Image 1: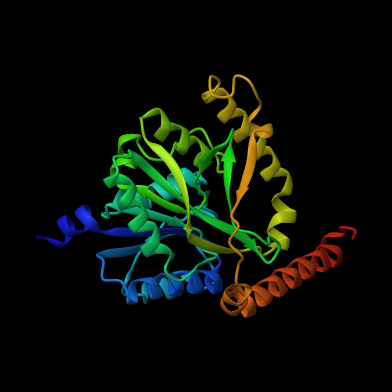
Image 2: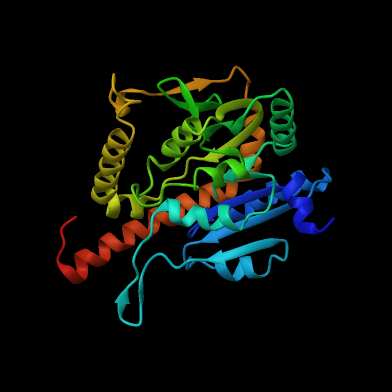
Length: 304
């Protein structure tokens, strides 16, 4: 059996998108690698980088166990502005090149709780063996350190996936993420609804847990606050229109909720994994933001 056939029949592809988060990305990939050290399963790690300028690309090219795709999504080239593509386009690059039976989507600023990938894989296999036409399995997660419980997000009571596993053939059947109608915010919900429409179920398991770092990109959020709000409203309106039958009795914004797990988190895992990187990232972003404000005051006459 070839490597491709082995991956297609029983392998796991882990995919991440990233941009200028090298300290967190390194922690995330380290936690993924640890999962595979004690688990003999065909696997691959795929990272899509949006043109990072913080040393991420140089670091990625040295990681011989990581498939790296560089998709410059910002800035200029040959005097022209680069067209910024959607999150869906970004992630579809990784989905379409993956070869595993399952595709695990993670953020570039999270930690995999030990055993979670294996548990999720085995739970997916078990439910398929039971005759369940499962298309996606969401992992419980939390924003550390603000959230005290793990949870999954729901829309009208239906779980959708922030972190977790997809059946690769199900993704292909629904033509992956809708990369045309959404900038970012509602594309994951849309994907869940299309899987449901195709006859798949989307479920959750708290046997698989993710710690997500609630860092604050001060400068970026302040500069893009208005644009992000506009994009959020655009995506919410697009989802409401595309799925008007599903939302016939309610507005999307009023139908989103969380389902919490009763599992008590062990803060030492996140503290040990994220502590220093979390502190330094927030400090650096805060200092950069304040320095840019001072620069604007001194050289552009902008008031504080």
